[in-house]
Image (tube, rainbow, N blue to C red; front, side, top):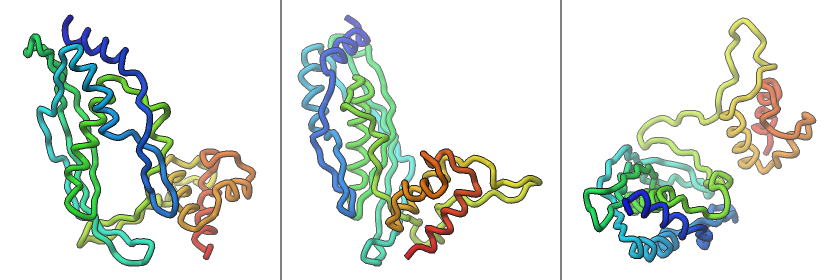
Length: 227
């Protein structure tokens, strides 16, 4: 078998890896995730069986920043942000010149010195998951990451709320909202403790994507006025 055939066999046998890691997201919220250990434990015996050796052959620092955000207690905290590009190689042990490279990107954020390590762990884990098409049972995009308002240390903070469109010869109030406007509405509801459904009900809507810019602007102003 060549490396493609071996990896296809491995993919068929690995199947689904359950989410056993509980992640605290702040404000009493949490979500499930699959750990690196669970992925490695699932992959390692299959790679041994089919003679595949995988490892990170190259890493590149894409971005590194020192960020500041205001904690729930009002104090400013510093977070170290690292974004890495990793090339993960899968080699046929019987024919080392026969290999497949998978590129993955990952971000690590930590208040101490663990940001780089987190980025490497995430990059390696997702490289293995994508190479072997490992399912975790659901879509990771459904799990929201904890929201923070960050700014680069020593620089002024840019607003995260998209602006209301400038007048370009027509009334923008009837224009549909963009994805970034919907995201800003979700965040504002969460920050002010107002259920999104309550906002939608006020306009007779089922989803935020049905909003027009006039409704969005009115809703954001009302949320800002909420104590």
